[in-house]
Image (cartoon, rainbow, N blue to C red; front, top):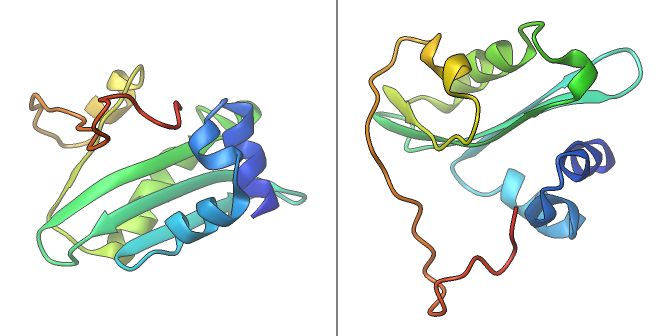
Length: 126
């Protein structure tokens, strides 16, 4: 988990970097498929896909270390994890990687991210 937490910390994703045990539970939860990419020394990428295994999947998390970006790591992680997770389609939310996701066969839809917290605020930004 150290490498995974370090990747998320580099992106300032507190929801994944502040509590390694919570991150471990999230990455190994029922219905979750998680894959990592490594170079010779360290973990350089992570993908987590939730899936019913038949129709619907959700790309919950993907991160690639900055020095390893634009080398096909994210694409390969998605393809490998989706083959194992199953599902006919993958839904996702992005803030800045639209061109990357548009490079896959896709259909663009509008969506929402709902926070069930009564205050309406994300208790753990990032």
